[in-house]
Length: 264
Ligand SMILES: [Zn+2]
Image (tube, rainbow, N blue to C red; front, side, top):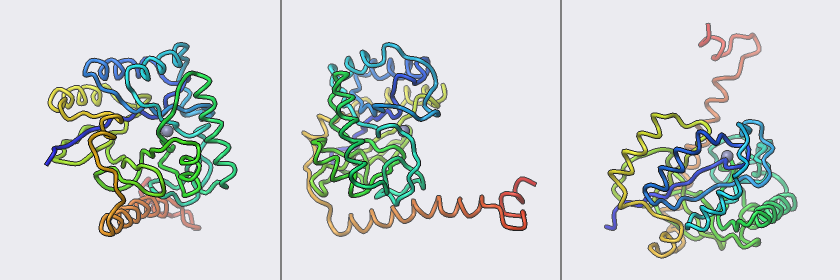
């Protein structure tokens, strides 16, 4: 057994992010020599991600890239108005799942072009709200990205010409084995979460990995039928969670829906 590996991923990075909240996380990663996957929004138009001004944003991303961090294309505008079923159906709404293939290709191509204009070469697709369908995967593959930060299971695998790195956890969770992508959103992360992560890094520093190391360390094969079946089950459970929540929060016609009763 090789022991666990943890890959850090940061989402929602853009020049409108909250720099004061990002700074201590960036320092923490630097202090422990972590080479994270940085999910950059090439042309943010999502008001929820507009938290301030970060004039040195692009320069800092270039520095991270030079230090070995991987650049991820985190959608295009991050505006989540589509509701097609995602291959990783964690949410009802997303930016990409269900959008016609030609538009997806245009967004992904344009996103890559914008990042290149800033000196960044995205090698990983980081879908906003896990929203991706087979059209997305084909576009990602054809544009030459090669890696998708999503999927099911505890190891990387190959499917339809791209490498899938499942993204499973959103904070420090100690594991015995497998590859675990820890996804973080610094705009909304608390000081307590930062301290918790510091403690986790102190204890688990030897198990932290990077995209480059993942490529070296793991054999990339397709999934077995058993892994596929497990992934299919996990997807169904994911979908049921928000479907049930939706039903519970919908007011009934007589105005006495579950939510109304809970609030009363
Ligand atoms: Zn996002």
